[in-house]
Length: 338
Image 1: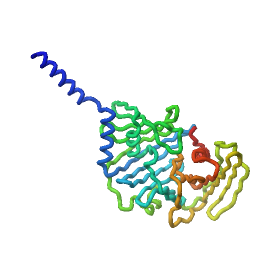
Image 2 (image 1 turned 90 degrees about the horizontal axis):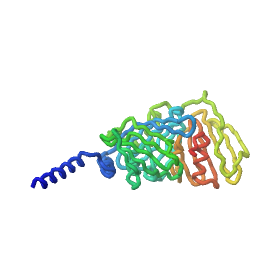
Image 3 (image 1 turned 45 degrees about the horizontal axis):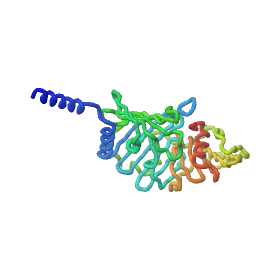
Image 4 (image 1 turned 180 degrees about the vertical axis):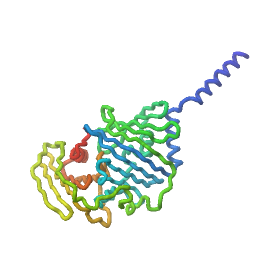
């Protein structure tokens, strides 16, 4: 009788200890999914560091999400506030807005569900859910996952480390890793508010194309700005610069660089000394928004367009692959990921 009682007490103690122990990987994933289901939306503030050369580029990011498919992501480069962009998703489609240039693209796109987004909570949870081989580590303060990424146009960043707060499962930090598992992109969340209130026009293109949407003054005049032609550092298909044309335009200057080789392409740079007239409707794009690291561009089968500061870039080629176009675009800014 005493032996049975002793065995019963031991078994009970084991159950109590197990109940008081740390959560399993599956437990944490279920809790993350429950959080996503229960919240009506969120507002987040984060900083993003892009480490592709000697100097890291830093961005301030503001994320608004309202269930189910409303998103607003403000990307503000600390060194280039005039190049601030907003990625917007509402009932009409997906937009990439550059208010300083009165430039906007409209996409019929599955963004953000079609690729990893290191600053979106739902994307992080989905990446954990999809990767059955994701590693799981518990520290004093965080639940840490290492998962595969899902970047459609880049195979150079295959992994990511995701840190969630143990107390409330809010995102804390994301490190996007290269093939050698060295961090290239790092996102640090500084605030995360659940179930916020949004104004009725918070996700409209009209509201977000105004200067107030950025929280900084947009470009009115750039008389003191300077323009210098930039050249791609990546060499693809033995292409060499064959011709350079420079012309004055109504708002500034345009430079056309023609590269010839096994794979030829044209790079157009249009610099605005004065703010161009606002278009009445966004420019429709048959392609996808693509994150170049330093900015978001519009990528189609034969063109890639993006803005940086007071300059608009257009890369055009019928011979380059999408991956090659992205590599060239990134190397124009000296940020190509190798």
